[in-house]
Amino acid sequence: MTTTDAIDVESIAVAIEPKPLRWARYAIGDDGEFTERGVCWARDGEHAVIELAGLPDARVTVTYDSTTARIAAAHLLGYVHQFDLDEPLPEHLLTTLLAPDTRTATGTTWDLEDGLALRYTAPFGASLIAEAAEWTLTADLATRWARALLTVAAELDHANAVAVQAILADRTGKTPMENIRAWLTDLHHELTADQKRLAERVREVLADEESIARGETLFAALDVAQPDLPTSLADLRLLSRETVTHEQAADVIEQLAARYALPIYLWTAASWYVRDEIGGGTLTEQEWLRVGRTVEMGNFSSMIENEQGNNGAALDVRLALYQAGVLCRECDARITGEIATTLGRCDECRPADPDDAMAEALAAGCPGAPNVENFVSHFLSSSGPCTHCGLPLPEYYHLVLEAEQAEYQQQQAARRAIEDKKHRVMTEARRLLAESMAQDGSDDSAEAKERRLVMARESVRQLRNWELESHYTHYVIKATRNIEQSELDIESTC
Image 1 (cartoon, helix red, strand yellow):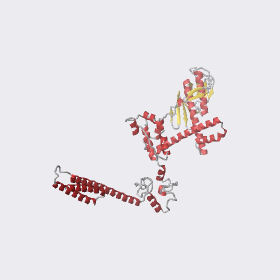
Image 2 (image 1 turned 180 degrees about the vertical axis):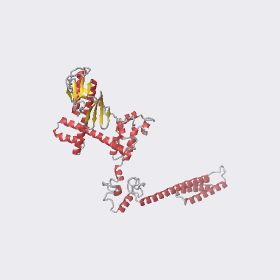
Image 3 (image 1 turned 90 degrees about the vertical axis):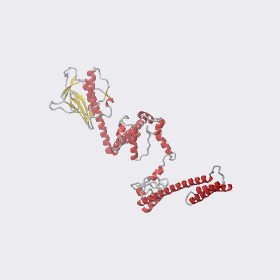
Image 4 (image 1 turned 120 degrees about the vertical axis):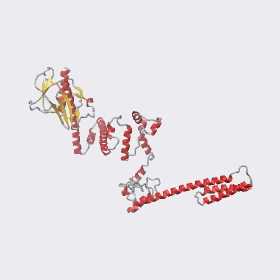
């Protein structure tokens, strides 16, 4: 399996003190050291010759540690400088590490060409692989070989550091970061003022590293525990913004918040108040990133925090603690245990008899309901407990609540029937009143007045009958009085 390094190693510069290769022929021993074999120029008469030590049928295996790898690299770079540039050796040479050709979980290989390869095997193995017993050391080969050796040395140093940290953690029962902080604490009284400031900066770096390490561990654990998320958390952390958008990230965060009961509220470019401010449409990904990183948007969390600190204006946290059964619903004492056991009350406030305790808890009502002091204020769920406060509801409560709900529905139906009757009564009253007061054009004869008087008296009679059936007596009385008044007006004109 071929992979690439997470870090661009060729961007890492290394300064090394070069060492000369004075002779033209060298043997390389099992520790990677170059041994002089006398003056014997290569066939081209310009370059040195390197040969593996030992007999042709029993060649040595060349292995390196971090120290011998750096020494060999110093000789190779010194050789390049002397023979290729023909200049005196400087005090230091600057070069870069060399990216491997293949890298797996347990091994890394650099193909040096000319039949040579360098291989690192985790945790502490580094060896030279050669197809021939002898080869010409060109400047290009020497340069690649040296850079690869320096990279191997870095790998070995890292492996050693990891091993030391693991051993310390195993022997002390502390993480590497904790061991370093403890060491700094022990040295504190011996440090100068400048050293103490440096130690404090080290502590800050350690805190950042711990935060990153915790994040990586948490991302991996959450990805395993939540395989159905829209994208993995590792992808959100590692992939480019062109691959994962902020709205996809918001979707993942909202799903995680729902699963772990985190009260959050997210803004994205799709939020209506953002679209409203720009007159419709939406922001591009880059535009949203600029908006989200502004000082104003950065004040979002602090604004919520300040609002909550202002007499709990944002959320009633105490009410939430009641609903969760963390505080006693009678005396505010701290409670431990499940609501199914505590019923939301501490030992002092909860009756010893389980039936009495349940009866009191039900009678007190649900702290999540608008009308708390109500026996039937709890919210039914298919699993049994109240969906708002978690109180386990007994079977008889379900029956009572169903009866209460049925009665409520009947009351609502009766109220609608009364509303309908009220409408019919008032409509009829207006009709009769209108007819009784209507003028027959220019007909002001005694017969017309008598006819209107009869209609008015009939209206009064019907309204009094409806009054006996209606809950809206005052409407009927008002209509009746209007008709009676019109009756008197008609009689006075007769």
